[in-house]
Image (cartoon, rainbow, N blue to C red):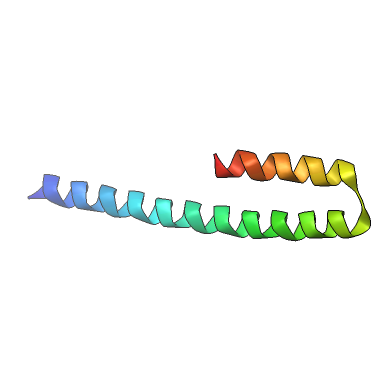
Length: 60
């Protein structure tokens, strides 16, 4: 019975970690999109390229 409890707690912990990772990725993606919009509005090509590269890396 203890093995089942340990396995359940481990799986629960992994599920919680996956949810947190996804939330953080979504938050960072939103921030990057906003920064890309600002770079475009300001005509900042260097920032735009850097941010789009970062966005691509996150989405891989």
